[in-house]
Image (cartoon, rainbow, N blue to C red):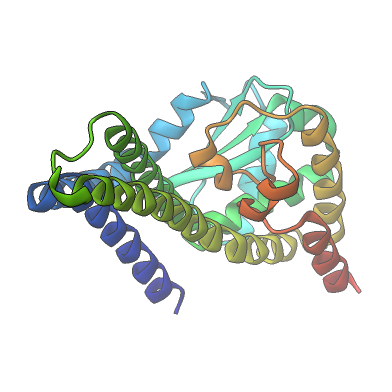
Length: 282
């Protein structure tokens, strides 16, 4: 069911991209957008992990450099029946972590230096269990493709708005140009919001599943609940300079935002995540 749901969501994102291309350039624009979507799906599948890791200047660590961290990841991977992922550390004071890659056999887990300083061993185990659950559920590929296509739709939408404002459409018959400009502007706004909402829908449901899976890998939901509480406070104090298109990949939202922006959060409310874990413990 999750595979079918994901396929439908990815198809919808691709259709939105093609419609945005058609709004910009007619049939040629739609064809270009379709080719672009295919190319980006290919790039997201094969190179998403490298792109994201290089974006945050993550450094792969060896057994000699981080023996305790690699020992925890190896133990949890063995419990979950997973291949040992590559382990990376990001020099950043903001406490956070994410997983990336195209499959369990080609996966990586990255943690910031901030989270290594903030959490105790059991809490860090809970966080690593959460990320390994994302790998086991194959959320890492789904999230990468969603981020890539959503970013492309937003880019085309921005191009459409600026083109409508400064370029017009060339149709001056009875206000047709103004109508077309309005259509491009309206559609670009709808496409941007739709891409954001689809990305949010993918992420929110899967965060709950990863929390539950991580708690089961560790054997106790309470360390992850405690870790999430600390991370929620830590990120609010030290927000991360993260690309919004990749925000859904982190265990907690790295971006600072409240009020209306919270409606477009890529993560479920922290209170609900903690409550679900505590109910599991009970």
